[in-house]
Length: 431
Image (tube, rainbow, N blue to C red; front, top):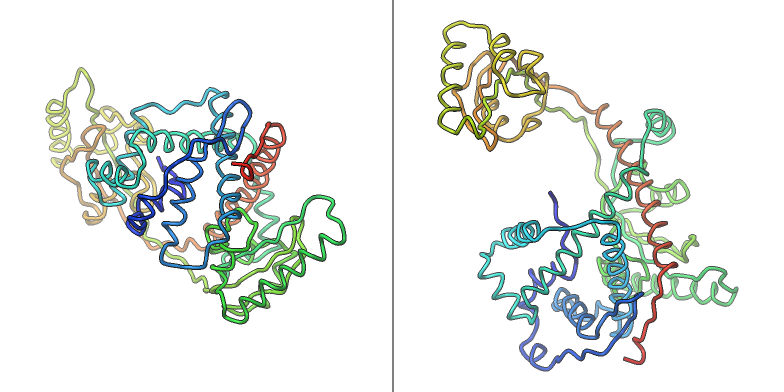
């Protein structure tokens, strides 16, 4: 299971040392209310902690963050949306157990090369209690499960949609690393508001062109997009994944160039092409093998399972048919009826334990019994081949493009509805 760690938490773990001692001593949380979210509240101390984490991340990049009031508004908007999603998740019956949170905390510690004691010390040094850290992590896990549940039944991709995309757009070709700066406009903006926004976008481009700020720094300081604090980064995308209205413009930009302001549904955008890379022919090694599993159970403990696996191995090595013994004795319900046939697969398709053994066998060679978390295995490698998967990957990429687009549209629609239905009162100016 993958655990998403928020930008704030990542900053806390990776860059908290950048916070000066004076800042840590002088900042005292004031528990006034900065926002009311339905029947819940967001406190000044929560906002200050989240803002401090952002400041810590960019401590060595002076001048890239927007003014304090703008940064607070950006972070508060993010906290409000997270609070609404977590509440909806709980109301929907989604739960995260204490043991799951503990496992997630251990994952955070491992990824940051810390022991649990070191993680606790780091949290304490930065003024974040361990229980508060667990609560924040639990909230993020709730939100991720809400997103998965919401999208599971709403995002379906048909083969006909894949065929249509492949016919109309180039898939598997060059990829481009994009960034975006958004100067937002409200719905029904007046001509004066449109003109002001366009002028602001042109001014931002002029600042970038002059070299006063690079694109990433300008995005952090000026962009109204949700990814502003990520420097406007949109990641690597194929030209096929770019909306048709912008694809021609993106193709016309050279690496490092920034577009003129473009009118979009949400306001005016500046598009940055950071890099371009070519995609090549994709070849993988596939393996064919047979598999027999002796599962460890309450009635067949570890040693008994090992002994049975060794007995079956010896019978195969003596000349008995692998497929026949697999049908009669294997506990692998997926492959048993096929005589243990795993078909053609890439190295770790059946798990790393099986993959490591298959990789070290020669064609036609039988493995010794080996254990995994489910029991004892015997593998016979039948063959290997180099397979061109370019076309299969093109279809998978097309399917992923359509799925991602649908997921983004569906969840953005859900978030807008969630926000519109909620009672949210910001007291930031008065706090």
